[in-house]
Length: 204
Length: 204
DNA sequence: TCAAGAATTGACCAATGGGACAATTAACAT
DNA sequence: ATGTTAATTGTCCCATTGGTCAATTCTTGA
Image (cartoon, each protein chain N blue to C red):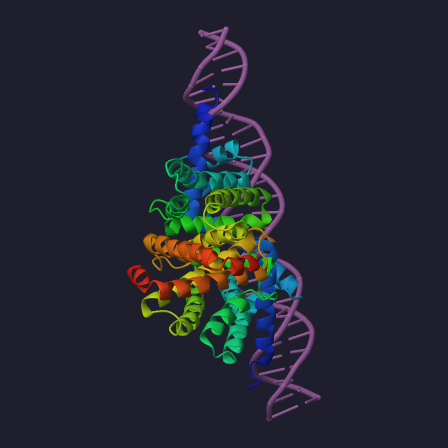
């Protein structure tokens, strides 16, 4: 099992460095040399561990998302109540260690490449699917079936929207604001779906 | 008055071309030569009308947004009812001529540059301010004062979120879906702010 | 200890792209 | 006509960058 250990360490260092450089330089500025320098290595080593720039940043994207994924999974593991699970998902996304302008910048740069990189698109799809799945499973216990998918998408969109705001204008939203607002939204929609089940059904 | 007419025409052609190339090639792929070719001109002419690549794309961003801005203004001009004004803003954003994956791709590429281009940031800020202003003025007549700003931001975020979805996974949302969902959100929040004014107030 | 393989480096290359510029052409006022 | 200005082109240049490769330095297992 220790066969690939050193190599794994290097790979991790490098994809982290890649993501960090991405945060402040954007995709165009995130040159192989800068990434290497940021990791205290030479450019050659980067291409020794990754076939090319594309592959490097694909791994960087996975790495960057892994943290959030783990945080969500951990909180969900100790949160049985459906409504609380929704909140857990939301809150994780706005934890200070994740909800940072520079991270958002890097993320934006990655997203901008999605249309032209099938692998990035796949990663993005997986990320969305996981979020949807977490939300949907909790929502089933909270709203009528016809409202589940739409609300899950809405919550995701709202989370993304607040995130986007952070990236485009740092300081325009705090994590707490966002969490509060989104939870307000969730409550309002749950209430609405109960108070007006017909309207919700029609809304499909 | 006709002094700058020809030059203005060229400039418009070029910034449009720039935006169109951006749609399918992204910022890195949107080279001056490609933009020129797309406009049926030579690279030299591009730098004759724009100081550099940055300036070109700053103008492209303005141009791209002008259409939406005009559409919103036009609809608002003939929509007095506050709640209908909110809907008008929302619907404009999801009109088929605007709500297109390729447009979103170009937009994403631009947004990714915002952190490193002060002018792009300024443009983005103006766009947001206009949207906020439109929403806020209508919301004042619909919800308690303490809920206005938060809700305006929420609506903006939700719009952005659905847009982002479209860019990252074309076909995952239709414009109609988005409009319907966002209107549901608006109604739910309006109701909630009336039914539970205290909760809303506290939520500040 | 030593050989085999992995890690790492630095030099090198070809391609590209942004931008400068001189030269040419078109537009137009007098 | 003609001179002046604007429009347009194509060429040239330089810096940068992704990627290759041979050479060198570790590791490490036997």
